[in-house]
Image (cartoon, rainbow, N blue to C red; front, side):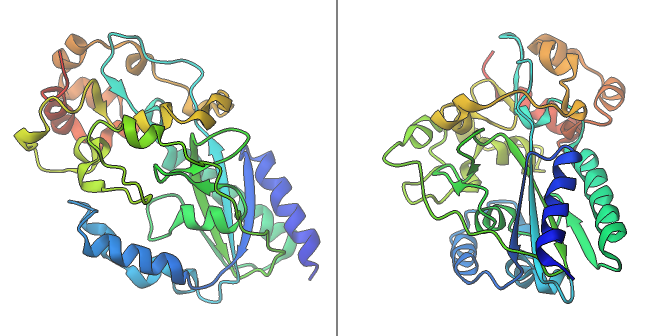
Length: 308
């Protein structure tokens, strides 16, 4: 087997499928990340995201997810929208403007694995997109794709941070990229200072239990603590403040993926439009949208906490 030619083929195939970046790292135990994750969990930074406590061993060692794994292929796909919401629209995180990214990217991962098998032969592999115990950002750094910013997001020098991260773990031996060794955030602290709820620490530790995205998406309780009143600003679903202020995102360009094209309702619905929305209409309009994760009841709950 020619590891060099197989690696080149995979990267070319990934780009042909619409991914913007592809990097490869050796499948191994993530010792440093394991220590950081353990400390983060012990400090209760995950809030109500109790699923983060599960499958710890799988999160830090891909060989437990895919027996015989040798390589972790990390793929990035840009989701920066070509159009932005109107000023009257309650704010929605840009990743949720279009169709559910899980569906869009999962299909691409399946096609990539099929292409690899057609090229190489019998290959065991599994694709993941943020719905399995995989430390995607750690693997992106190890694959040389970028660095972790102070806001916890992966940042690339050419296009900023508005990317989805997908992972393909395989038993195929490949050529491995050098890990990204530099941190280009420097002394900048725009994301730290701009965070409405002070969820970003000086040590690159994100307190998920304070993040607006946690309250508007992850929190399944239909009540939100009164202490959070007035802190959401205009954010109804998620929050992009820390990315919007990041200087590296001045290089962001509109996505070419049609599956991420913004829904007109997300761009144009005013607060009164959302308040008048029925559950039946919500399920029909947003049936393929990430917004369904919060469910109709969650969206209605969030509307009560954004400023009029």
